[in-house]
Image: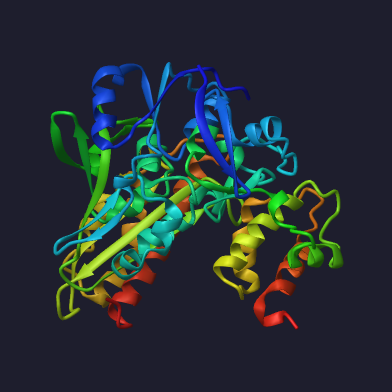
Length: 155
Length: 297
């Protein structure tokens, strides 16, 4: 059984036929070719599949694609327009990227946080990214990079 | 990690959902946020023949303040509840409890109805709601009824819901006098973990703040369902601040005796019981101080 549906990803409408037992992350990667969204644990623990759903970070591995109908989905591919996003520049400058596998999820969670609260303190940042694991353990640099983008610290 | 295929229905609204359950309830699993159910299906702990998704049923996503009650729709998400101005004002203990659930990603999707219907003995919303004397409003195609949340939980993963019924909302009575509460959760790490033990301590005084008129102590992760420690509560009712402060450690001991923890890979039964005593004492002291010493609500 396949369900006809429209998925709105990065502002674009995609008409798809999707088996209801497929997760959002699989449809994004396999059907739409948006492989910036990573698959890690598949169990909602690591956050590497984080995408924004109506502006909020969610684990795309724990959402069926059919549940995402009607929602605005943003993936990492949407974040850099022509120029990199300030967060992406800050991640590069602070060395907040090691192997890079957690980076798409980290950047999207950080973007959602800054969209909601432009000047978060360190505690708020740590709380926000608690669901994004970096197995290189480069958390200090990641927090520094997000801090650098907080409105109070920008030049 | 592959999910076994299933028949799928996206309910258009509550009425449609109930009609579908009336026909197919026995073989249907209800999908709310899905953070528990989808994981269970991936791990083949659950392989339902049918899934009914509630993502189109917007009418059950609310927090309503009424004269005597606050009503929380079953599909309200934890992130919204943690930030709800109504709940922050009336029941901050519930905001603290739901803020401790999973990660931000999980809280943006997972619903309070899902948390209760999954019926994990360690569900974080449950002790706070039990302590607040919450009731579950249950609905099927023939009508609605309310049962105490206490009677809603039947065992690990088991609720009082029939296959044709849905949890519609949680109803919490508003306190008559000044009240305060404290939620504490023990985890193996600082965030994003299941509770080894969670404790909700809630108290209400008379209008002059001279003595306690209601005490509620609820415990999670230490019995087949979340429980209330009634004997521990009874020892504190009608006491003033000094009397209650003297008796709080005794109440904590009674609470530890009321629980029936198990040993598993995450902690031993003995450790859990010891931590119940410590946490009830700590949450009790914090609650009493907030109620009697500072101008709590």
